[in-house]
Length: 420
Ligand code: HEM
Image 1 (spheres, rainbow, N blue to C red):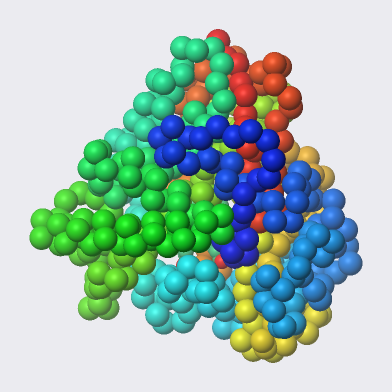
Image 2 (cartoon, helix red, strand yellow):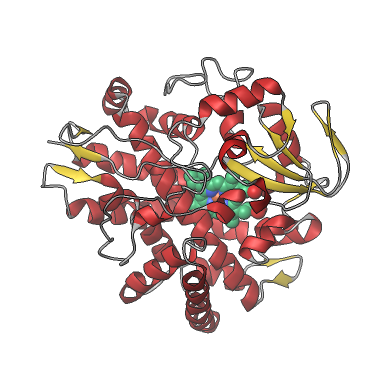
């Protein structure tokens, strides 16, 4: 989940669109074209990083096309590009707050700071503990992927974004929350509508109200008779004598949708794109499944689903020699940091065998992604299922070469494949 991305996600323009049959919603609406159809943002980001670790002004990509004031009218702006600057800012929550995101999302854990954040994070972390993850992996994530692959596994060809990556994380979250199966279709529709706020603000607000009403009933039910699911865990979790109120649970559940669904849908598409366009590396995975975890990390580094996070400076600070005044808006460019030559050898190369160095796709510091182990596990399960069930997976030559698109949120709009 991210910063400006949440504020700036917008529909792709042009071309005929097929509406998703389950959600009656077009996945391509979630493409981001406010700043144009950006296929390869990395050369301009590298050029900006060469100008300095932190540069005054909005992100390089936005300068040519855009009106920086969409982020912060009137405030001084800075953008961090180097790995060192990005991690320093994200680590320093005392000086660089994420409260600015409240404008976009309402008050949730991601905008909190200090003690309030620590307590909330501890409360919700308990629900994401390793034991829960292990159980979800075996009982639920593989079942979701298998059901989706059942729909097209005999066809010999498929478009994997519509057939798999778009549906898969929302269904995983629905099951983790323990929602009744009959409610999946509405939940999926509200979730997608909620995360498409910029495309249609009224629809997103209506979806938020519908979800709150729905969650109110589910939470009341689980408080009465707890079961074996995340909502029950959240309703009984306790830290320092505190429990989450109903409103805090609704806010957290609302955050999980953009945080846990859109990111994972895009990152799994990006990994598949990377592997399908580097068939030699896909072949390595096919012959050695133990490479899956490092392939996932390399995919996240090379093509992160979110390029920027957002912070507001609440104290004067010097970062990598650049003075950032209190009141400034700081775009933190994880996409540039992940390709910093000071940290990664030949950073533009997708190489699943490269020596592991931690990327910043999950953020850094106190707000670092709470769902990263779940995201990694989901992606590993999906990759294993695809390799098990779609032998000889390859791009479909009947279609144009795939591409990744977007500035704030990035992923391939389509991945046409053949198999068998
Ligand atoms: C590949 C998939 C994912 C990516 C790339 C990702 C990325 C991120 C990033 C960059 C942050 C920090 C944002 C900031 O500092 O401004 C974050 C926070 C968060 N993520 Fe994720 N995320 C992913 C999947 C998930 C999943 C599956 C969940 C849960 C179901 C989740 C839940 C959260 C939560 C709750 C936070 C807020 C943590 C806090 O403020 O303490 N994320 N994520």
